[in-house]
Image 1: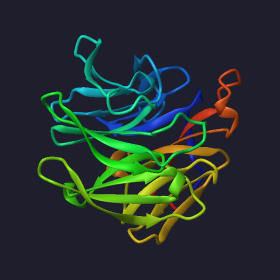
Image 2: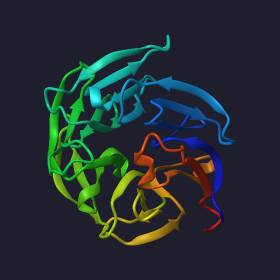
Image 3: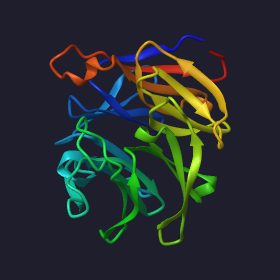
Image 4: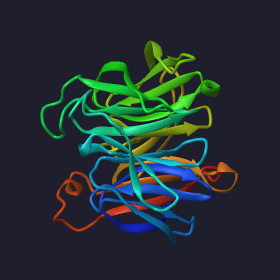
Length: 273
């Protein structure tokens, strides 16, 4: 089945999320978070100071937002304002990237270098606790990107873009991460945004213009090839039967003066490819 375009004119779409019956994403070049209905109708727009921009929801419904270049985590209040939740600059002044909520805690990862400067295996994951405290729980990651919780909350998996692998950690009661291991090697790929799928994890691959469903151990269960670079993906829709994909022309999307080529695609997972 051909993917359906439900939104276009996006600069660089990232941080795909399905929440509350809507598809959410961040446009890094426009500096906004959007919530759109499945037909593409815009429902909400939130302006964020700097990118990378990622976000996730606490159990009480509050939205936490990463303003990456500021090294800050912000809280979106019911009044529609952004209030400081954490300053991560003491751990690293490189851009902070993905955020993932697990119970009352939040995991936020940092590249460890400034893209597209020469890559360093210096990425970290910090833990933000409800009292506002932060601490590092993982180090020496090769461009940490998307994250997802697996095994009924017992495992955190992070995409290491510049290592061509998905890396897993056990989650301890206090939120610490341990027992680091390779969840799946994806050689020849640069996994970006990820989400849980049927039997494995979907990862978006920018340079290979595809979204891939991979099982633990590395078996490829499904691959969706597209015409543009894929940056992030999320499973949602009625019955969780749709894969939403954020894509754009690569590497042209890196030039903010160019035309916005980004799109949101939707493909039914129960209809074949």
